[in-house]
Image 1 (cartoon, one colour):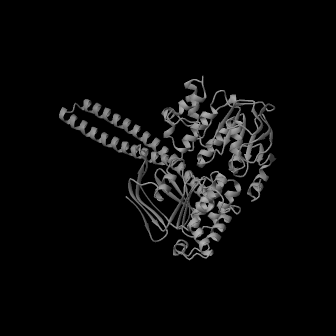
Image 2: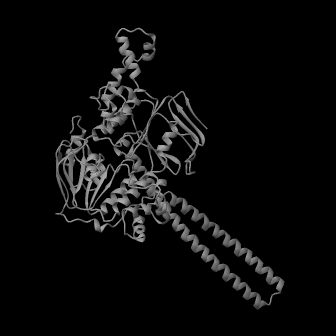
Image 3: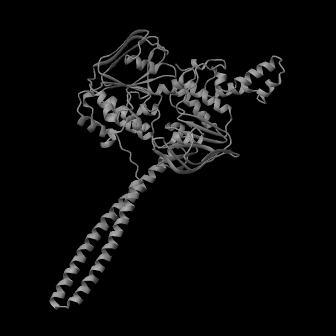
Length: 553
């Protein structure tokens, strides 16, 4: 077991095995090599993408096998936290060199200053240029990290990694929580990557279009596809069509082998009856009749064995073909009690001013089953507004009121109790609803039978999201206003499709805060609100242009 650094530019895993402390296996003998260029690492939630990056980065130790890194490595984890008391130059890792440069410029000739600075005389210029390339032009090196938004801190950490000029850069879901302007800057950083190894784990289709190849992690093994996301999707679709044809042929072969085996049984039985009848008619000696019976039995057993073997082989081929078919189960749930009349007021805001964010005077009325997208730059206060609407936060002034039953699904999915089962978590939000009804509905959320008894703490990311979504949507009284905060963060594309399917069945009003424009378009948004100092009505066409501008609201 080892994690070593060698000359060259690549990352190699050899016979890598890893399991969680509770014994859950993640990898067993995984081997792969990632060379120069941009690689998108994809796979369904729970397959171990983030775990693999942490193993490559040396943040986790494998049970067996080796990780070999060619050159220097930098890693941007998914759940990023930065000390808010740091200055920007400290977060960038250049504070010591910057202080040494200042001292030298002031005339101090202490050798320690020259040792600290090395050959990095343009450290400030490089830092400001890197920040500027990521859209952080106005961020001074002396500014406190605590004054920056969550999206800005992600870009700041990326800037720190780029300043290290690593040979290998690992990015885990880097566009989570980034507004459109920040995403565009990150896309440009990926586009400009020209040397070394870049590995990015993401569900962001626009980001994945920019990679040179896609590595799909599935069932503990990696399959490679040339090109970006669209090329990968086309290749998978072609594979699935071929797999479906193979499965149909295998099923037809199983049916044919069954028929032939049945016909063989009938033939052998008929032959034995005829032989017995002839022996009786000829009055053959017992020893001769017995020999004929044994010979017929052996011949029949051999023929049956031949066809049984063929049937077993056909069944094995069918199982192999079935394993190649991807299970893209969809959520199809019925929620009639969430319906709300078109003219009814479900939410009203009057002169609302938030404790955090930019909103100074928000006024809004939401009627009937409207589907509203709440968009805005990082730091605009989208999450604060949603938490104010739930009553969790009090406004500085003004009033917000929900006129119908309301449910909120936060980014952190903290609606779940990790010690309770999936079914018990739903029962908490649906008092008075029978266990039988809860289980029937959970089956539609893909928690069938014993899976509904799994503890929430043991669920994968995608399963945890589905469980939280079920607890929110199946609540009693049935929610007629559903609010979601960045629901597609950390979701693979299959989970996003499942979320879209679940929202298709919701008949109440929707308010979704998200930076994911393709997802918002897929759920049938009827009204777009841009959050700034006020709530501004806009259109889908204007949103991208407004938010991609550096001086956006």
